[in-house]
Length: 238
Image (tube, rainbow, N blue to C red; front, side):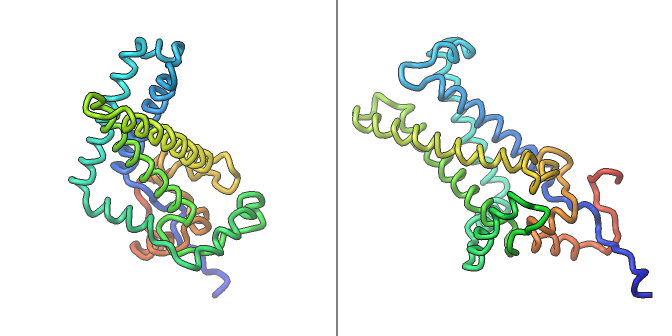
């Protein structure tokens, strides 16, 4: 009978692979250290913070070399995973006119998720995630470029160094704002994103009903790749 038909859709969908989660962890740990060490060096320095890293000179050295490490890691990912890197960038810049409706409905969804859903979008990332991805990538690029420039002060004019430092500081605060928003959403503190933290900080999976609300097109594509009712690897109970 039609009324006896059970919902055979998977309860969990794998959003992020283990390598993606490990890369994400490496980037945010490295970026967190760079933010801490950078704050300690602001102005004439913050002695209490610099002391954690052994003083002003060691803090500056740590900041510089860990920064070079992050640049090297980024270059390595681009070289070893060019297809995935291009897909990430393509998914992040793919905005459509219909995405404007998502931004209009988003505040209601965040405030009253039990009564409102965000407007449907067709991307791998929602429009807010895409905007955040672009801000973070551009900020990191600016920080990397200005950081490399300032690593050779003897070859710069005082004005060039001063402007590089000013842009470096500005990009730091832009990045901090974007990352702060990302942490607020990804932590699951907001009711509308309850449980989403598992996608990157757990086993990589999210509940199917949550995926339907946040990434409807992606959820449909994931279900289309497997037989109805088949188990999804890497999720609780599997």
